[in-house]
Amino acid sequence: MDLTQKVERMNGIVMRYYTLATTHVVANKILTDKCHTAYKSGIPVMVADWIHNVWDTSQRDLIDGTNECFTKYSCPIFYNLNICVSQLTNAKKNAIKNIIDNHGIHSHEAMLVIS
Image 1: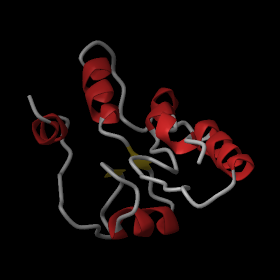
Image 2: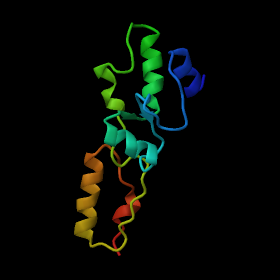
Image 3: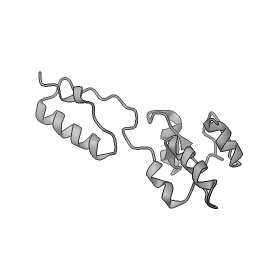
Image 4: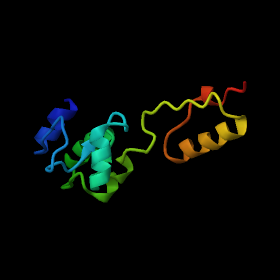
């Protein structure tokens, strides 16, 4: 079953665009107008695994997607971003790598290539 079917079977509505009725945004990448608007409006931005886990949990327990146990599926700040640091010193590359790693995303080995 795909994400849309799961949302609809949980009485949710999947919409392509952000509206005043939007309660959550599911993001594949973070740099979109929809995510930006959601963040500004205080609307949670989640990763797709949130839907799968709400679905699975709701099959056993009476629970909904706003339960605190699902906050771990909030979309990390650097989600699916490619960050190029090729023109920086190694010290700055390491500092940026630490920031990225501390926000739930693992940096790529190539990021720290010494030139």
